[in-house]
Image 1 (cartoon, rainbow, N blue to C red):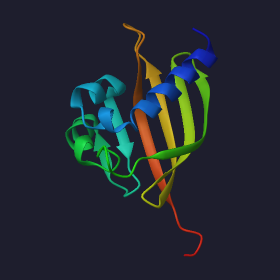
Image 2: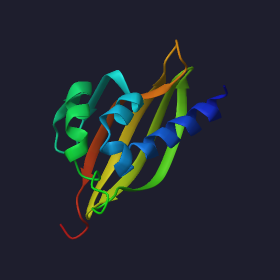
Image 3: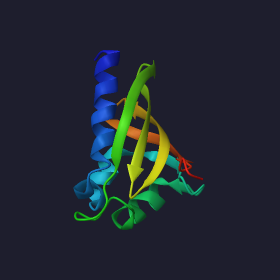
Image 4: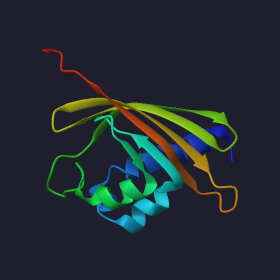
Length: 127
C-alpha cells in the first residue's frame, strides 16, 4: 500500500464517521475507532473509545433527518508507515470547527482506525 492509498483510506473512513447510519450504529463505529481512541472535542471534553461508542448515536449528526456534518478542505499526509494525519473544517447546524485526526493501520489485519481526533471551534465572523 502506498502513502497515497493510506491517505485515501483514512479520508474515506473519516467521511463514514460523519454518516448518520454509522453514527447510530455502535457496531459500525467500533470498526472505525481504534481501541486506544481519544478525542478532545470542540467543547473541550476528553472522550475515550468507550465514551464515544456509547454517546455517538445521540450526538450531533446522528439523526437521519437532522443536521449533517459538511466537511471541506480535507487534506491528509502520511506521517510514517501506517500513520496518517487529516485536517479539515466542518460546519454543522451553523457551528464551524477545524478538525484534526490521526489514523493508524492495524499491524495484524491492515484496517485503518481513528486513533486521535481534535475539534477546535471557529468563532462566527460577526462575533
